[in-house]
Image (tube, rainbow, N blue to C red; front, top):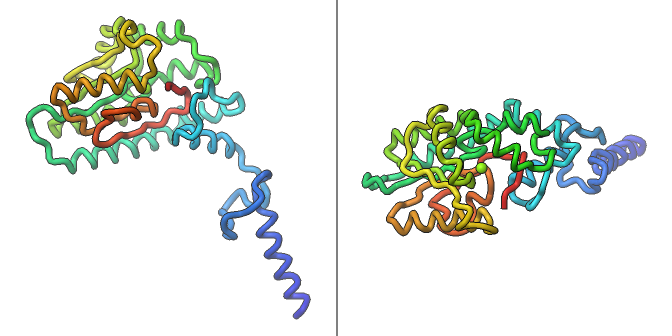
Length: 260
Ligand SMILES: [Mg+2]
């Protein structure tokens, strides 16, 4: 009996002390996860933690994807999870939009960002380390001017649903005014056939200002014109923070780059 008790106590000690990841000293709960317990390292876990921290705006101001996470981010972007995560956002946005009582005066608008929101630059980033390489404005602008970015299918789905609900769409992008024609034809070519406004950045007006400042100002001007921003969707927190952010914001995933 005493031996049994001893074994039982030894077992508890093993569970409470021996099942953590290296560096994680105390377990929050004694229940074990189904896999990865017992001190086994889970491949990719630290990159997953990095991505979660990035998506929740806990890690800010980062310049590149950590080198050791290049492969992880690549798999995420090209695999099913990115699409599933995007679908979850788009579905939630649709359920919200559907629940609204609209005035029907054409003043209810939905703001979409463009890059990594309505259009996807994954074909470009796949050639540039999925954000692990430092940002190269010359090469990226060259890619933008090709006008070959595909739609993010989940956003295109939401876009069509919003139009069918009678909501007007405004695109608000950090792309420059000089890229208007290419951007407009790129949007049209992949299925975004109509919009109320396409707002691009005038560099002279916003030189040295953050995206938060630029987008807040443009949203403020829209509201001054009597528009009601019922929804606002982007892949960067700088699309969604600041002032005049809209009744609800929706954050799409983007572990490839950070814009302040
Ligand atoms: Mg974007």
